[in-house]
Amino acid sequence: MSALSNKSWRDLRRRPGRAISTIATIAFAVAGLWIFAMPVLMTDAMNHRIATDRVYDVRLTTTDVVLDPEQLAELRAVPGVVALEARTVYNTTLVAGDRRRDVLLVGVPDWSDQDVDAVGVDEGRAPVGDEVVTDRMNALTGRYSGGLGANISVEDGAGHARPLVVAGRGDTLAFSQLAAQGQAVLYAPQTTANSLAHASGVDSIEFRVRDPQLASGVATEVRAHLLEMKPDVTFPILSMCANPAHGPVRRSSPTSRRCSTWGRRSRSSQRSCSSRTR
Image (cartoon, rainbow, N blue to C red):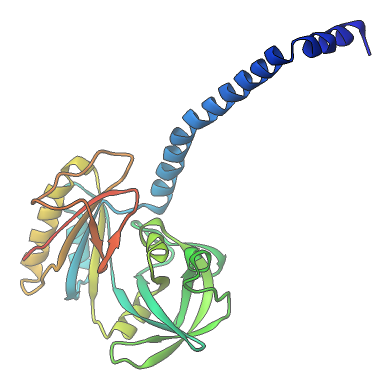
């Protein structure tokens, strides 16, 4: 051991209080830097996830409505709309063995082309026919722990059990949050979702807007165009959720700060609102 090292250890033993104080100060300084950096890191991670999943800014819940490609193109052409998807979202019951639980079945129109609320498949493959993708949060929250190849049944609109097979595991931020709130989430081809729900069209229109501060006005325009095409359609809930990367959206009417999503409360980090319309 060198003379310098010997002297350092002698000084530390001679003044232990000063040594402990110095070490504690350095430790608190490092911890402080970590604590102050965490909000920025979490915000960056959330913004990255929002961009990757293409989380919607506005969601219109409708009664079952049939929209052909030309009509969907007209809605996508509304000024201020960046991207728009229409799907069926079906609340039903999942039967796995002797257990029954609430499940949200989310239809995906085109697995290879998802412009809003893109469902990423991390394991397995995209489903075809009577196959589904189970959300990753299902297993983490204990909602459903079946893996690839598992056989399950889901009640259709008439209450009959329909057999399905788990083809993959994945998620998307907008729907995955619901698995932590009390129900399992499954993703299926849109045709399968409609077959199970006994639906003929879609009941959820989700879109991203160019300026989230103007989301309320854009939502009004989209709704007006839809009513022109389909006068009989009704809107049980109008739900807006601005991305955390932007400011809160303008609200079209006095509302609470709870986002009523698919019949269940949402407590996601997105600022949100809901209002009854028509």
